[in-house]
Image (cartoon, rainbow, N blue to C red; front, side, top):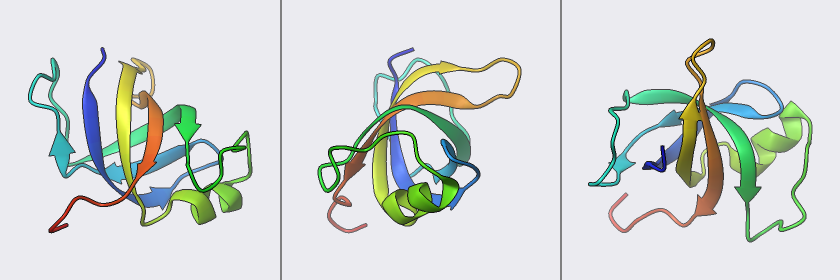
Length: 96
């Protein structure tokens, strides 16, 4: 897909999946996205913890819950309706 979405992480669902409240979308996105989407991490870039790897649900919660992330959408899993994304931890945009 190559679309871009972003927003705060609301809930951690397991060791590699979370709910994202979508507050930002790229203007050139090809697909539509709901207000809340489930995101499965294919790759994560966290400047505060560059050694991030496969972790527990609790570790992912400490790393992401409440933080603003941007996601490069790789594809939507047709069986689970989950977005598989590269995830980047960001500073929230001004006024957020």
